[in-house]
Image (tube, rainbow, N blue to C red):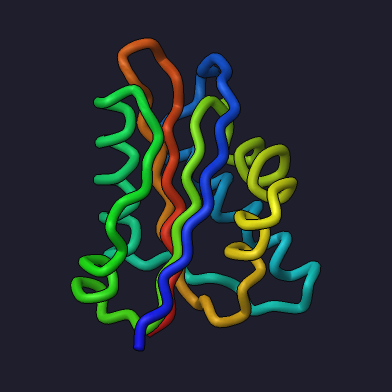
Length: 141
């Protein structure tokens, strides 16, 4: 039986000069800093999870709205037994989305600190107005 969890966070803001790749690196690093502080294992970046996160971030940016993707295809495509997703928009850096956003929201924090997860994929994309949309997909094989 697969377990699927979701969390959403809305905080509008303006984009700053950071690349999508740097944004994701900051978010992965910040996520793992919090996991280490709670004596949890480091999440490894999974290429399949990153692909699904990138698709979701791009869809949200294209539509100028935040929403969750169906995680059943992620479970199937990535060979996972458990999956979760955090989404947000408006945070200007990967550090900010984790430390000022997700860690201050119980459902997001729960996903980040869930000991079942061993892999993560994070992607951020800007919409036509320069607002960042981000998806963090977590999973376990």
